[in-house]
Amino acid sequence: MLYVALTRAKQDAVLTFPERWDKANRRYLKDEAMSMFLRSIRSYLDVKRVTAADVAEAAS
Image (cartoon, rainbow, N blue to C red):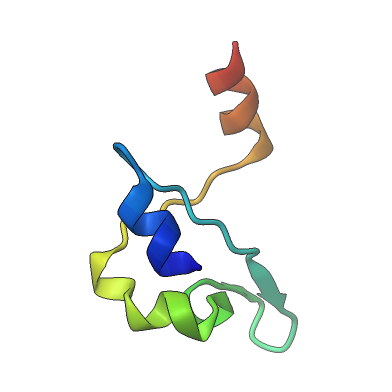
């Protein structure tokens, strides 16, 4: 299904994944939080952290 979505995108495809907080090491897990499918194409992705404020700003 991911392949179909990526090959049908006209311009950009936006893929999301949740960040996870690692309490033991007091840090966010970024690449480690990705699914194995996204990790397998990681070199082709431009990963950006988007906050609720970013989304609200883009909507206005």
